[in-house]
Length: 153
Image (cartoon, rainbow, N blue to C red; front, side, top):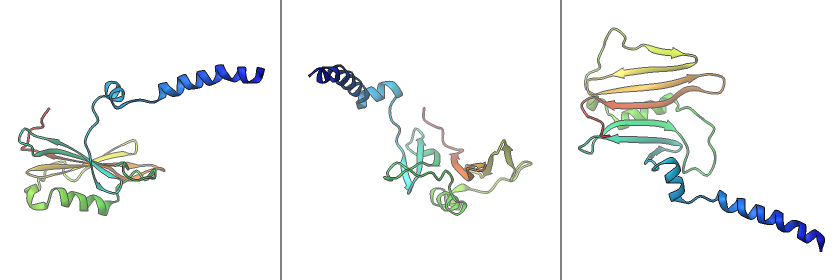
């Protein structure tokens, strides 16, 4: 009987902490802000879009992040063939306008294993973010920005 009474305080403590771990949608929103909207454009590859005042895409940010897959995907990069396929799908060559060639075109900035290169066109700039390390080699994000569309705040 004494043993049963010893477990009661422990059970009450566990019950108290278990109840405080559960968080509602409103609690999470007040703590972290409004959830953002994203599109899963390929399995494990998400795209966030910012729109201009006319409802047109002004910026697209593409990154690997599995949300709908029931498994955790440890792959961090987007293969180069898939990067090209996605960019061609989202911004066909005809919509990009003429390629701009400048003093620094076709250069890649590399700092500490991370890199960035931008393909500059008349209508859009397409920036590829890369990572070169033992754990991760390749494109980790792509950002497409339209030049003639003002981002809505």
